[in-house]
Length: 163
Image (cartoon, rainbow, N blue to C red):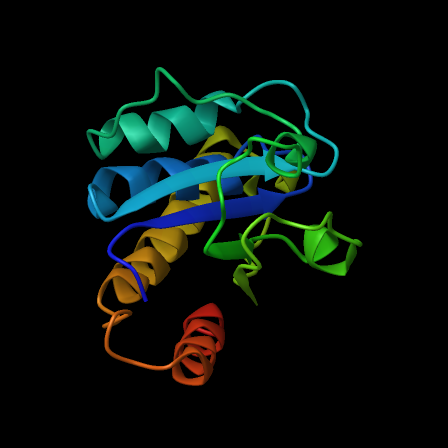
């Protein structure tokens, strides 16, 4: 495989999980990776609790925004190498045809935005989601993408999604 990879993280609302994944991979994976995020039904706003998790990890948040996955299916969109769904709803939806015939995997993470309860419960849910995404992205970054075949990469991507 090549020396630079474009990665798209998908979620229904593109307000928390996919946003945290985008920021994390851009922070940890530059210059080899460029990450994006999008939603099938974007909420139009990034959850403040997601931004709080990223800021606590000293990751930039100023360019993050909730957007539709349609932006990545248009002419002129970046050629995608990998597309990861991070919510079960997005994994079940019919996705657009992505430029570049990317490899895909489902890395489901519980929706922290769906948690109700105390502020402490909500903060814990966002922290847990961030920790799970951070761990999976770290494992992804350890894959020797340029030296293993696509079948092995797919196997490893699926395995990461179960961790």
